[in-house]
Length: 302
Figure 1: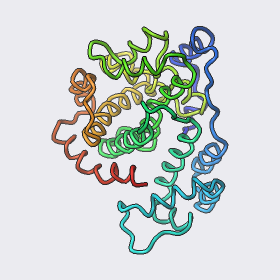
Figure 2: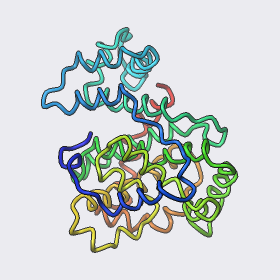
Figure 3: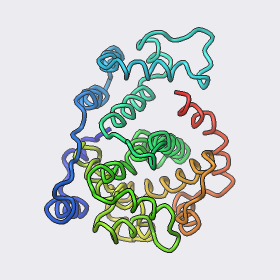
């Protein structure tokens, strides 16, 4: 959710960089999808001091597919109910306001940013698991709001499908970036297109008026030099973004372990620095993986 501080913030270095990216180069003609009206309405209600559950249920009910998705999730084995949920109101009562907000946000984002490439077959499942993992980590560490961490996890890689749709040759670049071990994902993207999914994802997050630390973190989530950048200590929002970057790589590791995919080089290179930033060790990470397994499984079932 967008804080009042974020809404009234002055332009940051990230803002200026994103403005330059939009004004020139390969992103001049790229289409950044607008924030869905239902998501705006959802945020507006959830930003209230005392959100109205019926108003949230009404928002969910405005889209038949979204309502069905919410009910299907409530009926997944993860929640183990003896009697099936049959309405949006029942689903909301079972899931709670915060989880309902997360599920609706994921649904609306997924349906606003379409993924059609076989290369991205499980893109949104993985994104949702990353978001769940980041929220779980935030709850254990108490340094970042879990809702902020969840949204950051959901938006980290949204630039990839947008580049796939709008930039010629990006499918080949994506295949190469996933395979290369001698340079980073974003270095491969920039070599081919003079931009990368971190820039595009940050543009989407800013366009959708997400809190400043989220689009800052999305912008630098492959730049782990920020973990040693002393300048961030003077900027509270960037300090939060730094924590989100560290959480993000740990979350990627947890999701990769669950999905049985090859670990990306970034975990070997920067995993220890991220763990040190969060002041956790490998034992805690293993405990998190055990705790998250049921939620990860429910993503595919829901």
